[in-house]
View 1 (spheres, rainbow, N blue to C red):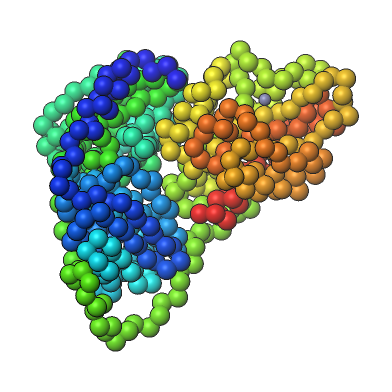
View 2: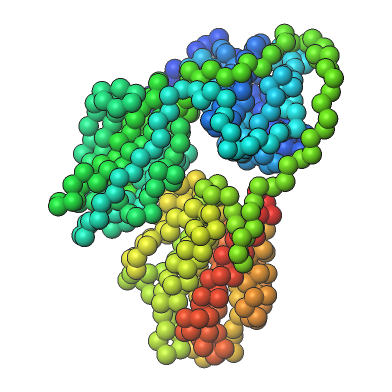
Length: 504
Ligand SMILES: [Zn+2]
């Protein structure tokens, strides 16, 4: 990736952040959430006395470890059966926080959460079975003042750039754009609902139709809300306003020549930036006994609550996935100056895979999956930026779509091949390959391991699918046929959705 500016500054910054660890603090050594038992366990190197509370909107159990630092960033863990995810972060330089966030419509009785210290360094938090709540009833007392996201759009005829969305990533936020790299003007002010705002004015930029308040991040990284406004139509100027929550650091932007704007905290590490509303939230306190005490006597134990079903709503022919939970990156294998393989009759690989990729993206979006394409147009793109788009966006899955070629003298070679590199990639490849094979009735040229760059350097389960041979006498007929390509797109989408359903 060629970041257009500031990369040297960034490296300098990372060096500076690492100093500030207090000497006597405990360190969180390990943590684990057992999804089958709803049991969180964690260990620190010296004594801690955790505090726990249940906070709403979204509903989550927050466990603070005062006087504790997080040695290194740890990955979020995805939950199941009503638990959305478990994440661990540093809320201040003295406190590590573990958050167990529930899916909408689920909660627990805080009185039944059992926090126990086996020793003063080894703790466990046993959650009771989750309870379903009526999602239409108001949650108990919304906490910190969170104002909703807003988008006000206006039709713009011509703009060099369009904003496609904003996502939270592992190191900040990413504004997805298409078109040219926008010029960004940044201003800081004391206005807005929280009294601190940063506005980013993107010149010659419009807001895409699909960007709605619901698609913007909620309470992530100390930003209490986002506002997108088309402040001017001629010339088009799109304004992104970040309303900074309590404890929010300053933020800076970097534009990248692969499209998009990166927003990073200025002067602090992202792991020190708490989610908005958690800093000062007042929830229901979960009683925590001193360590090494016997557990609280079981009160008249409640009737067992059946494990709630996986919250997916089947609709239509393709599996429906709960909105916004999954991000899939789709990589059309070739484009722009790079036509890919050229086959019988001069058919170019890019002519085949681009429409398939776009249809896969549309189908996934319809079924509730967030999709990032490594490119939205017929443009040239190196391998490294494709990987960095996926890794930066923190995607759940990556799929690169190709068509195959051997030699024009081998029209007898036809069929489907799917490649993976990692073990998780292998499972993903198996599911997609089998479904495409079955639905398309193609020759099976099998699932194979390979060291292709885009599947080797991506940090999520990643596959590369070869949808047929542009040099094959059988496949070429199909690859030229728009109706066949639509069926292929549907089969690939079904494979991806099925893998998500089976594994998350
Ligand atoms: Zn290719």
